[in-house]
Image (cartoon, rainbow, N blue to C red; front, top):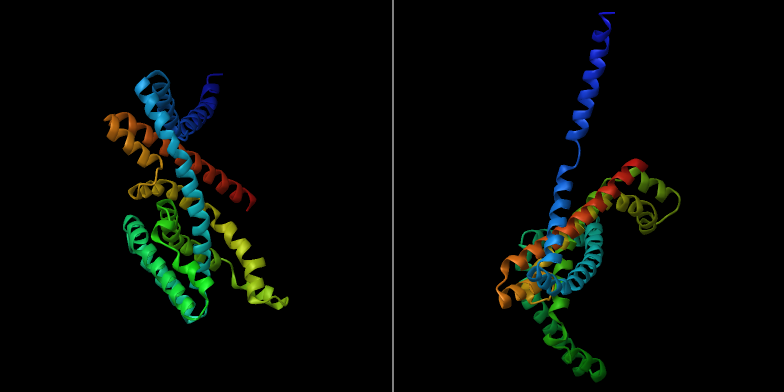
Length: 288
């Protein structure tokens, strides 16, 4: 009877180790974020200064979300075209895509926003006006007037900001699409071509669906990054939550309230989106 505790002791030690491991693996960082959000929400509901700041700043949420969504959809198109160009056997397409990717990735996003908004757009407008003058010289006055009527004021700062973000992130997404396409074994393309499909049909119906599925988590991570980088459009006076917070802080001198709420709003959006990306990764991994 005296030897029985010795036989039970290892089981107890194993149970203690498993309980310690489960406690260690708990997402304490997530609990901390929830506590921060609850605390800020409590301050907003109980403190009039924070409540006023929140009601003023939340107006910019619509602009932030709209700018991010539109920019990302356009960026996906840019990235897909550039990614296909990066793997193209055409020397011209390959080099143009490579130039676009390397050029954009080598310049800071803030500089690109300024360049596209204040240099690229005026150059584009001048080019359209010159085309209009050329068409008018050919006797096509109707078409010529359409192009010559375009001015810099016709393109709002919101449109320029969306273009800048889309053009910038398109270069980063291009590398994601390129890696995703190249991750598909060559036998898939060969099998599709042996069935009588053209190169375009093989890419559309066989390669791209598999490649996009493989890069979905990476695309989600870039979308989260764009949500944060959308704050840079405030330099163009776009009234997103960053610009609205700056206006509120500058007029009321309540910098603490404005920027705490701004930080928590961005934190809330990015954490929710990051959790969504993690759930997507788990579902894809489970399916595999």
